[in-house]
Length: 156
Image (cartoon, rainbow, N blue to C red; front, side):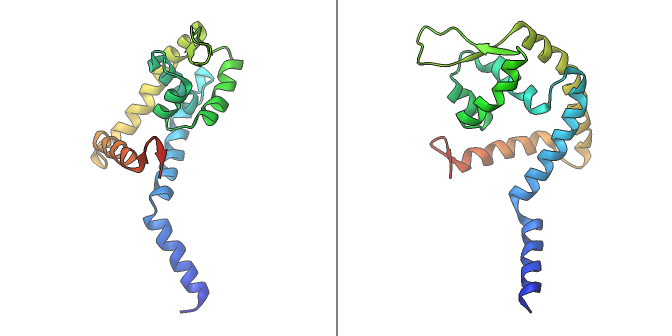
């Protein structure tokens, strides 16, 4: 077998077995689906998820919020910029100025509420594939895998 054939075989093996390849492809497909259903809100699916996480955060620090979203603080800060510019989130008033938290504005809460209809439509489309995939079990397995791959809050 020549080097080109071996190279091609290795690439085929990666494409068929790689967890990252498969999950990123699924993530892009799901992102397009949720984005399409959230179009009326002016939000992307990724932004909707950040807003929902903030709504649930109950005073978590940016670092804790980032951990809950699987983002480092720098990535979260970057993701918050357009949400701040759109007046959907603001810095929360903290007694301790060293601690940074964010909260939804009234407009942010309205956008999340408006997005719930689109989210529900997208979610129903995903769950309609149950004959092929048990999404509840897959979600639980992905969460377990995520916990196993994270050590002390850091990816291995």
